[in-house]
Length: 125
Ligand SMILES: *[C@@H]1O[C@H](CO)[C@@H](O)[C@H](O)[C@H]1NC(C)=O
Ligand SMILES: *[C@@H]1O[C@H](CO)[C@@H](O)[C@H](O)[C@H]1NC(C)=O
Image (cartoon, rainbow, N blue to C red; front, side):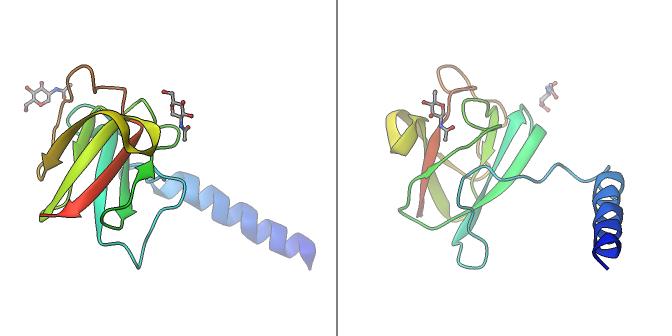
C-alpha cells in the first residue's frame, strides 16, 4: 500500500517536471503568499522584460512583504496590477531607498534598484 502511494507520488513528480516546459516558472516571491484573500498580485522577474524566473505574488494593501530567494536582491523587472500603486524597497521590512510604480511597471530596473529589491508594499490607487 505504501509503495503504491510512493509510486503515485513519483509519477506525479515526474509529470510536474515534464509538463511545465512552455509555462513560466511559478514560484513564491514572498514567505507567506496570499491567494484567496489577496487584494492583487505583483509580478516580479529575475530577468529584464519579464524573463528569467517570475512570480505573481498575492498581496494585501498596506502590508509589507519581504522577497525571498531567488527573488531577494535579484529582481530586474516588476509589474503591479492595474489600480494599485506599489513601493519597492532596497532593504527588508520596507526600509531604505525606494521607488513608486504603477501598472505596467518597469521592464528594466535601473541602479540602484536593479538586483537590489528586498521588500514591497502596495496600496489602492
Ligand atoms: C527588452 O525589450 C526592449 C524593448 O522591446 C528591447 O529593445 C530589448 O532588446 C529587450 N531586451 C532583452 C534582453 O530581451
Ligand atoms: C535579503 O537580502 C538581504 C541582503 O541584501 C538580507 O539581509 C536579507 O536577510 C534577505 N532576506 C531574505 C528574506 O532572504
